[in-house]
Image 1: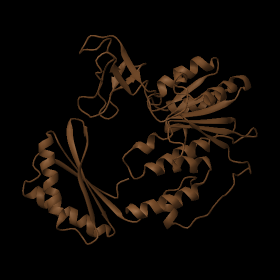
Image 2: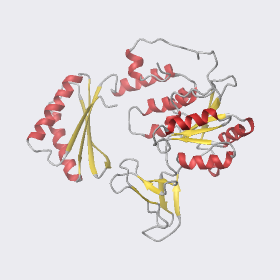
Image 3: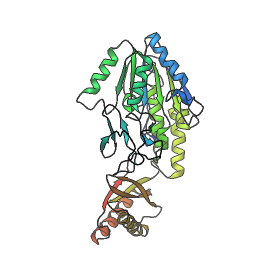
Image 4: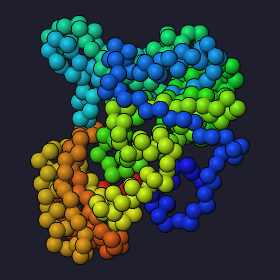
Length: 368
């Protein structure tokens, strides 16, 4: 059972529909807030979001706020020379974690102290761009005091059973804000939550993934489902830079069937699941020329041996991870078994002849 079924399930399974909440209450009204026209001086919160949250302090209510990005700030740079702090082993920015006093890579786990000055030019004017849950927690705690703010993300929930303690404290509080990543959007049932807020709702849409629209819709729809479960009803505010994006508009209408119908048509046109099977091949090596050569070699072997109608994409570069350069090949085919067999033969042949020497190869059939 789910309020946000996957397109594959919607197409293939018999559906039993529950069109109303168990107690007959209406789903909360959802308002989409266009952050393109918002006053930048207000920080990460739209003026209407600030107003709604401050109203909780007066009315002693509860809210759930979701920002699917942890840490204090996702990017640190020098205002004088423009130097940015990135992970030396991965092609990503280091994220500032204020409480831990470090810059951290969320991919390989590398951590280093937050610098006092720029090592390139010596300037002390360092800028932290963007906001994560840690920074938003401090902002809310300051502006909503004495209303308690409970942060739930992978940083605060790392100790055993810590997440249960955070949820217990939020449930027992007379009023407060539960702030977190997608962990706060799924499965919680608090009757006194009257306000839901989604920040940066379009962030998922910027991922290079054919499931990006599905995930953006699901996060907004799931968070909206946490609000208005009690007698007081509820409402939801969705902050976004893409207010016209169909996943966000459909989630604001609580229109899962309409979104899924459009999403299935898009996937049919582009030959993505459930209308084709995918096989992803990822190659990695410490040196970029080695992985590029291996990817070209494997592409050449596959190009002449695939079943009819199978499409071969790539090799495409992927960001460096844990010191290893990566390339990806992607196959789309209707015959899952035949496509997988062709890939197995090509990979085993290339490995057996030493053409992939120095590289690791990972094959994922129907990658999720």
